[in-house]
Image (cartoon, rainbow, N blue to C red; front, side, top):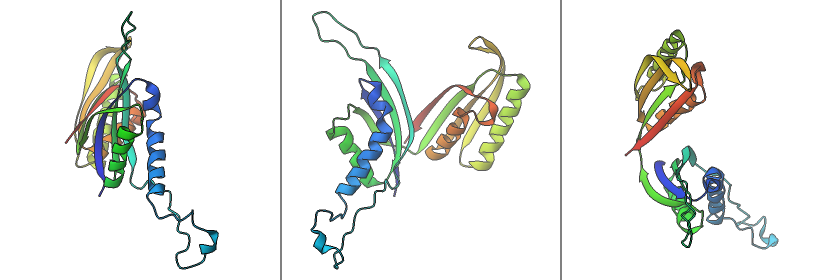
Length: 215
């Protein structure tokens, strides 16, 4: 049975967080191979017998990175005669994985010198997304609001959403109307909706968004 886990990670460089998804996939694939039933080291003469070569299939299973976002929480400081204070990068990571891979992830963070420290790790079930669009013409925003509300209602019945249009707003020196929204529900559903919105779904880009995850 798959689980959805939230990790709050800290590092000293964006490099660790930027390569995180690919590194996790590679690590889990190598772990699956090592812990599998491969007999590749046996003598070739064994091939064709009852205990024939049975290599492990490289498969990451149900593992999937659902959400990853990094930001600088401290710029660091150079100090005379004392140790410098390093930059601190915070990365929020949400993954879907089976229990075996969850244990492997813990090993990756704890034992393999990934450069990432785990500040928090917990199972999550629901997510809360807040967003605001860029400023557009009033009629365009009203149409956007109606279409998003209709889409969520028809495709994600377990999600609760509250959207509103606001006029005469100035963002990035551009004035117009914006759509603000709160979307709450199962993690997978909310993150699917988020992906559509941040990718400019329905023709309007998102100015700012934030997600929180709850048990």
